[in-house]
Image 1 (spheres, one colour):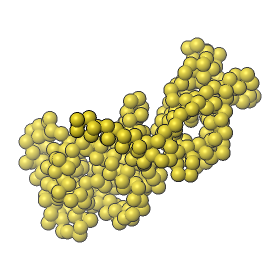
Image 2: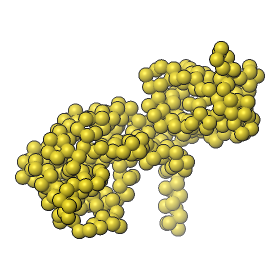
Image 3: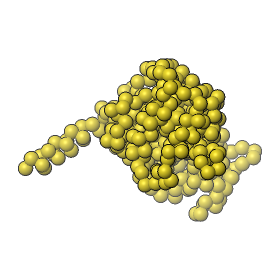
Length: 370
């Protein structure tokens, strides 16, 4: 009987970490909460707000036709304010329609101009308020929207922060609306918008941008922020935490470490920023983008695009020596040639991220030691 009893205890304990409530609320009431500063859609999250005009219009179509809308999840802060955890795009669309949505600087975003939809082609070109250029919804239609009810799930202030982050992850993983780093960015923002802004400043540091040279697609997916986060987690990590076991489930490790670092902000971020900037200045001055490309031994040239493996070896390796004040080699292209000349063909095929990191992060530190 010990097994079921133990599981029951685990269920009871886990339930206590999340205190929740639920009730329907009209769009008019939610709008008033936003106006009064009691509903926070986190303007920083709007960088992930990527619905097209047609998708937004379909939501308004659903409201007008009485089609049920999925639940909105909010987390209650210690001050009682509701922060949108899941439903950002729905709430933002409704607020933008009414001309009330503000950006991260507090400026009003252009009101939504609706598109015609499958069932309501007459929505084409309509706005909330009438202007000389566009037609508006009628007063009755506006009232129908205001009186529409949404199911609000409230994660109360008694819930643990970790439970709120986990809930956000799970809700968004079901819909797959975010890339892994976009979801991780939202977690960081939930913990500390200031820390997220600090990470963005690192990602926009010119030597970092110039040496990584990521594609537009990767930049859109916030992969530059993932590289910054990987560097932060790995550059000065103790050897005991660089084993495959310690790095197990690396994406989840990045999530946990990101939130933990955000909660400690500002902590030692000024010192870390100095190490980061010095690291990429050194790389820029001693090989630049070639440092993160593969050396083709047969053609005697660095070829191809940015490689994670090279970043893990050289960016974290240089960062380690800069942080610890130990002598290191600055002939980075020669070190890179040595590294790639010892790599067998297909060395990374079938290898897990954890296995690769456990081998190459320590190897980078060794290769670069003067």
